[in-house]
Length: 180
Image 1 (cartoon, rainbow, N blue to C red):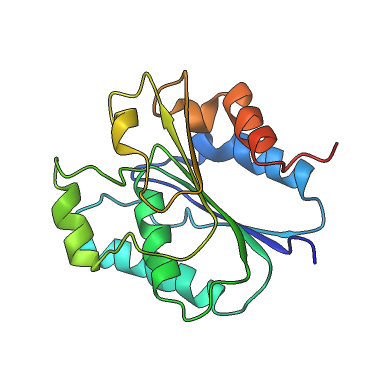
Image 2: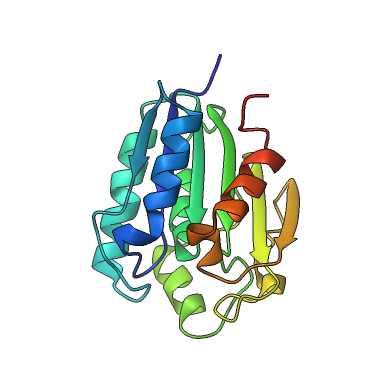
């Protein structure tokens, strides 16, 4: 069965301008699939009510099992992990891709935000993680999850995962999303 749905979970303070490239690329790669961007809530990681709304919305969407690819940037990867951990069945999630997500980060309030979400890294899914060698926001050595099937660092900085066409292409090529 082919992919039916793509969900993109942005990080904190992600303006629509930042994800315009992903919206364009995903429509081109998946012209017939449902594409959902959970970018309607502008949040900071310490805003429990807002992060809970995003997690609840994503969990509700995921409760309708369709072959799904989840893409998440920065703290959006933490929220997406929480959404997945809320599910009983994750077998329909084809790939879960995090970019510059602070999986191992414990400073700047990230540890406390994870605790308030009751976040766990132990999810059973096809997780692929990416970090940026030049990222001063979430250093690359904190972006790998112990549960990732594969981890790759790219020569970009934090917003490069959203703004640079070559980074989006590299991720899509690496994961085999482009049709040959």
